[in-house]
Length: 415
RNA sequence: GCGAUCGUAGCUCAGUUGGUUAGAGCGCCGGUUUGUGGUACCGGAGGUCGGGGGUUCGAGACCCCUCGAUCGCCCCA
Image (cartoon, rainbow, N blue to C red; front, top):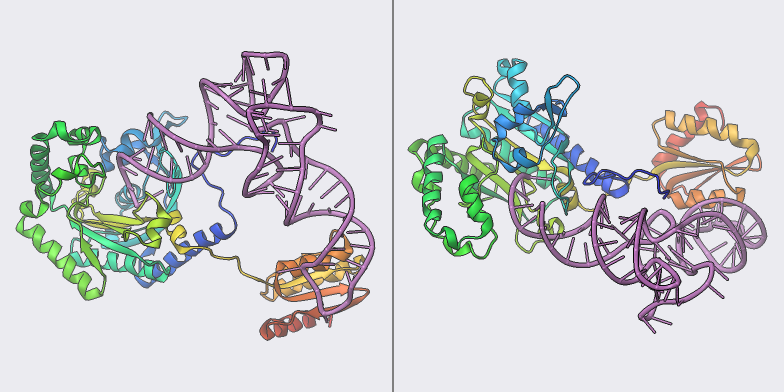
């Protein structure tokens, strides 16, 4: 590579070959499942006013305080490359009057941007698939959304990943629990890890899933959300879990599961690889493959009427890592011209073949004697060789393709 | 933001304790061979060793800075 070739931006990826196939496979499967559940497709802008995210996710969250790609545009507005989908969708719901469609089920996918240190399964430009139900406050909405996520993973052929489920309660439950946690951890503050001491002020719920050995002894006795749940919140969670059971979605209760963004209420969940599974191995430290929850307060936060909503997002790259190798599809026909006199004929043949809906590759360059070898190497169903003024069909492995091929060429009155 | 490991041809890698014109396999290009076939052989193009600075008579090999990659921490999908 030349010295003056600029390199790619850190944390971005150029995806090619089997990886690109796996990526496409994830997206295609999501699109199929999305339609099964009747989620409507939406396309969203890649950037928004900075406040859309700052107000939604919470100013103190890591995402907002240190991971956003924010910049001033030429008009002086502060804009931000979307670090997630939900906030933008909530904004669109309000600014486009999508309330009229409520309850609204939508799905989308695309790139997101977060200024983080790249590592396995974590990139600065990464991609997610996303599903949201806005304007539905019933637990059935949570169930439908989770059933969809569960089916998606199954259809992708991903195994060894289970749904970890928790409730954060309603706003009041959550606040009471949070206060109790701060109280509890403050008592043992100087024995906690530095990270957790800091979390104590910023994000005490996070201490609960700390990996630091020094924090472990204090976790079992920490206050549990269940003790702070209002009757409504408890009933809601029970409705969700029994709904999941009825829908045949396996789940485990994860009392310590919290979500990083401020807007979550009630149901919170993550699909995580089972300890020691192949999936856990494939993902490394970035274990959450799909996560989300209920965000009943968000729309109101953005200036709308109180509107309940639930949603999830999943990392396409992470799912692709679990899906494994996906090979590119075989080409139907390779047309090889070994005799330059027949290049035009060959060209006509490839066009006709492609026009008939078959994929075709055309080889008519390089050493004449090596062209056929190249064709063989590509690995096609049929090779159509043109040499010495004649046409020869070889590798007739699939009758269907051959018949189609014959009719394509007939239409061209070549054969 | 913190830590560890790493960075040699398009790809995967070798390069002895620093010492003459930096190597291999694969791939690519060309030739011969083969001619219902992804064979074999010959030849060729292509790196100045991520970038910059330093130590040295001399550095791909040592030191510093920087960029990037990988894997952790943190955070999250």
